[in-house]
Image (cartoon, rainbow, N blue to C red; front, top):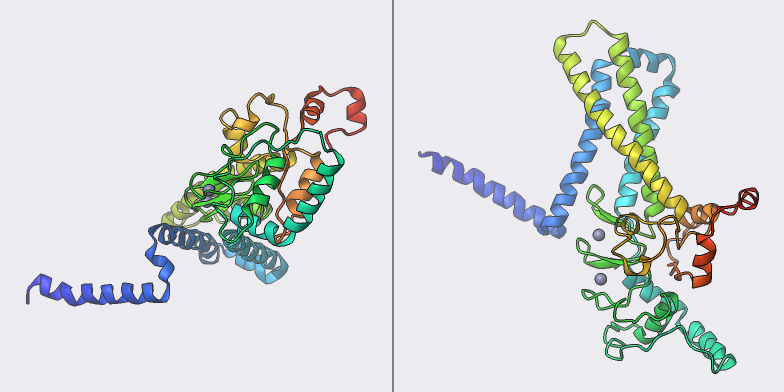
Length: 349
Ligand SMILES: [Zn+2]
Ligand SMILES: [Zn+2]
């Protein structure tokens, strides 16, 4: 029998397994989802390797576990909590504009229309913030949604004088509220778009930025604790075979790089949370039209440190917050330099 003849049954068996896998999990047919799943498996395996190395090499830790089981138990709880937080964040919605549009339409459209009509009749001659809208856009992207009311609602939150055309996503054909962006990986517009996280396989936006922050915090703490355990392992057990020592030093090197990256990421996202900014707004500030001309040190969407933290951490998953662009007076007030009185009165809070 030839080599190709021997390989053929193996190839057919392989194809059969792949076909059955695709039948069981149709999402695996998408290369993007396959890559995302591969990264998730790699991340879990990486965590397992670091954990397994302790129980294989670290006799000091095993001895300590016998004497003080709470120490290892706390570490294992943090380990499990980090992985759970990773998957919870990964499978959570970042807050898609289309979902916000549906939710808004179901709950608020009628109430908003009534209040708007009454406001307009009260100030009959006053100029509206809402500019003239492109009639072609209204109703075209309905998908069962009252897009006319949505366009009016969104345009009221946009800077005065802007046209609905520039706020319309050319891919989804929907009017985006301020701070939204179309994600080409998710193929959807995301509210308060931060970035598309390759490791999590999802976008980070209004609805999962808080979960993402907690995940980085947990991962950083776990990484730091593991780093301490590895350094202790190297210090307290000096008479190890050379290959064990090489593995521990290699793992320690990988951990150190991961820790530096995680701590910087944590500091960066904490800064974003305190100032109510997104990564996209910070990096592309000069390219984003509505942020042009605003001084660098002015954070237009910041409502004070305490409110920013509250909004980030206590955002309810079923309520979408459409942030209005601040008025010229509000921007002027934010741009004022800090005085001693501002410090005493905690203006930044
Ligand atoms: Zn879009
Ligand atoms: Zn995305």
